[in-house]
Image 1 (spheres, chains in turn yellow, blue):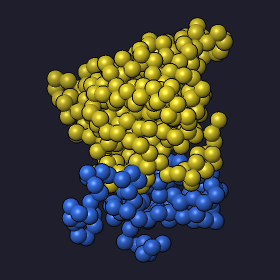
Image 2: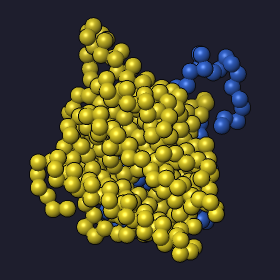
Image 3: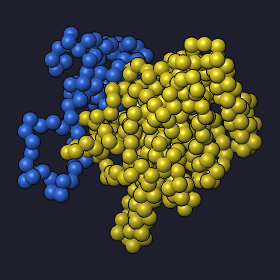
Image 4: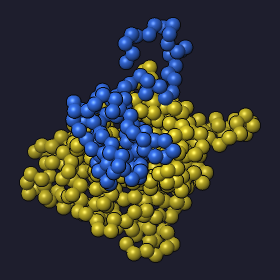
Length: 318
Length: 100
C-alpha cells in the first residue's frame, strides 16, 4: 500500500497534474486528482467530463495534464473511457500494445449523479476495466452553485435559495455509492479529501480487480460551501467525524467501513461552519431541521453498519 | 499570459495543446494575498503540506520538503492549516520578500 513517501517519489519522477491550473485557491479537487494519479503506478489515460476541473486545467494554450487526456461533454465521460478501454483491449489482443495502461475518468457530482448517470450505469454494466472517480463537491460549482442531486438537504444554492417557501434544498441527497454498488462491480469506495492516504490505499487496492472501479470522493468547495479558503481539509474532516460522509469500501459485495469515528460529533458541528447552512441557526424552525438532518445521518450510518455486519462475514462492534 | 500574442505560425500545428504546459503559461502566484513562510527548523518532514497542496507548490527533493514554489502558490493557506508543527505561517503578501 502506498504511503506518503511512495506518492512523493512517484510525483518526483513524473508530475502528472502540474501547477498553473486556474482552480480557486484552496480548491480540494487537485488534491484528489494528484493523489489518485500518484497512487497508480502504471501509465494512465484520463477522460474528464465538463466541470471546474476540466475548465480550469485546460485553458488554451496550456494544459495541466501531463498524461494523455481527453475532455468530453458533461454526460459521457464514462462512455468515452469505456471506448478507450475497448480500443486498448483490441490493440492488446492484436499484439500492438504490451504494457498495462490504466483508464481513469474524472467527473464532478453534476457529471456523475445527474447528467452522466446513464452512461456510467452502462459502463459499469458492460464491465469495462476502468476507474471512475466522482469528485463530489455537492453542487454545480462551475456554473455558479446550482443544486445537484448530490446537494444535501437544507443547503442554500442559487436554484434552491433560502426563503419563506423552502429552507434551501428541500430534498435529501441521493446515495449514488449505493446505486453503484447495485451494479455488482468488483470495487466501490467512498472517500474524502481529508483522508487522502486512505484514498490512495483504496485506489491501489482496487487495481488488483479487473472490471469497473468506482470512487465517490467528497471534495470541499470553499466558494459554494461558503467557507474560508484554508479550511478545505477541516470541512471534509468534520463531514467524516460527524458520520455525514462515511468512509467505506465494497469489495465484491462485501462492505467494510474503513474509518469509524471513535467519538462521533453531532452533525451540527459540520453545518455551523458553512455559510450555505447559516439559515439553520437563525430560529427554532432551523433547530428542527438540524434534528431531522441528524436523524437522516444516523439512519444512514446504522444501515451501513448493519450492511457491514451482514455482508462482510465478520462480526464487528458498531 | 505571454507578453505578446503568438501568430498562427508560432502556435502548435492544429492548435494542439501540449500537456503539462500550464506552469510556464499561468504564473498563478500573482493571485496571492497571503504568503506562506516555511520554518525549516520546526519542520518534521511529514509532507502533509505537500499532499494537500492544491497547486503542487511544495517543492520536494528525495521525498523531503525543500521549499515553496512562489510562482504558482495561490496563498490558500491549506498548508499552514494542516501543518502539525506550525512550521508554515501565513503573512500578508506585502510583507514578503521577493523570491523568498
